[in-house]
Amino acid sequence: MKMREAKQVLKMGDEKYIMAIDEGTTGIRAIIFDHGGNIVSQSYEEIKQIFPKAGWCEQDATEIWEKCVSVMRGAIAGFGIGAEDIEAIGITTQRSTNLLWNKKSGKPIYNAITWHDTRTAELCSKMDGNGKIRAVRAIGNVARKISGIWKGILMTKTGALLITASNLSFTPASALAHTAWMLDNVDGARERAEKGEILFGTIDTWLIWNLTNGRVHATDFSNASSTGMFDPFALKWSKLFLSTFNIPESILPEVRDTSGDFGVADKKILGAEVPIRSAVADQQSALFAEGCFNPGEVKCTNGTGSFIDMNVGSRPPASLHKLVPHIAWSIDGKVTYMLEGMINTTGSAIQWLKDNLGIIDDVNLSEKMANSVESTEGVYFVPAFTGLSSPYWDPHACGIAVGLRRKTKKEH
Image (cartoon, rainbow, N blue to C red; front, side):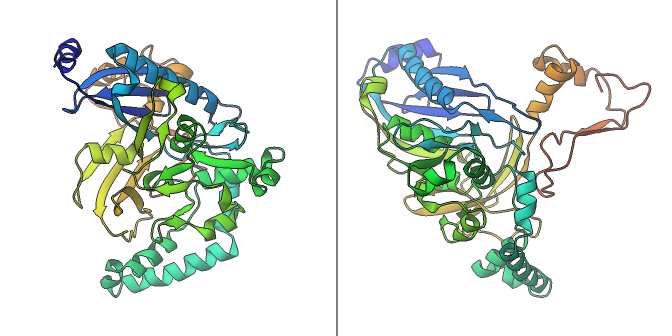
């Protein structure tokens, strides 16, 4: 159904609508759906990325919030309805990008550090060698060896926990390391955090806090499990990880159901109070949207990076290949888990070809160029601009082009 036709039909009745906020690495969008799942209006704005140093990537959290308000208002105005016609708001966001802000003023104390920032690579390597972490990993390695003799250990929750422990290695993409960096490098941050004056949040928490005018400081299980601070087995913030990185638990948000009550958007924002009834991380949202509700069902998402996610059911699994279980969602108290393989840089590598090397003039022409030659002629490129993710977890890896010859052209 075309948008104009949808307007005419839907406005004949006393319809209510659902608003989705989709905040990603490069932009934010507000989409209004009817109860038939039709998109009736949407609004989009780009969000800048800031690169202060090599390997650093930040975003202005105030810009994210202001553009969130702008696209919400734009989507409502585009359909000619009022905020009172919006039944509920759902929020999906990029994962691990995080910030700290002043509890009283609501102002960030530093830019949001994004999920593909690698400034904490050395810190993570140091913490990998921490005595407590090495001990946990050693115990896990014993379980891994047992699994070679008795496969049944993989099917137990304790076995899965121990096998996961053997894979334990901190990644600079995590909010865990970013938060420790901010507490130690932003003037007065640690002291203020210990006094209860600072709050932590991933982008979903930041938007919810602002939408509710500071009344709700919360996240959901899917976002929490992507921070590196959360124990997906115990379903609570990990005291081991927090103590290792010296992060006070008091700054962290409450963890609620993905389909939980996240408060009400303040009347001043849209002109009427609107309930916030869902928050979910972007890849988990995509897994749900693709209908992967049963164990073994898989989706692949290609964007800034690429993510292959598999629903693994109601019990966290053991991975012998350095994959860490994530929480896909929690609905009515029932938790669903997933395993994920990821590449940090895919779509952004095409943007790099345009902006940095000038090989292409328009990113939309990349497919046409690639299809203009019969093969790659043996040329391949590893886009490890921010290191390698699963299953290598090497933050020091760099991009490399292999197989270049005299006859190699830009189309290859």
